[in-house]
Length: 167
Image (tube, rainbow, N blue to C red; front, side, top):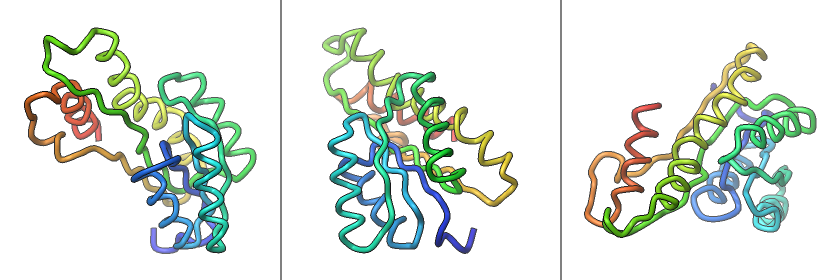
């Protein structure tokens, strides 16, 4: 895809960090950005930053852990802004600790967000993107820790290895 101006991008976890910077960069390239985050106030802060530089963005609540919530958000975003040309799966959390100190609940949470969140978003947005017949791109954000595991980050590394394998 050579021309991004005027097209729609969706960025998950865009309320801060890499997601916020990615949303801003896409807006700077002329895209209309659906800024999604679990926290609407954080998404709105990103939108305010984008709009302050002349970009176009809109905030949406998105809980990537829930397939139903992702489908609902995909419906809402597509109705409000149009079918996305770019999907950036950025939402993620970190759970640190040695294996024996990492609870089953922590494992469930990090897998739900970091790995299954990517799957849920692809399943919800890709049919719309493909059905639109236009060029499109999916960017799945992983980590260098998806290539090499380190002590104390087993759960995080496992999810990022999973994102790389899925991609």
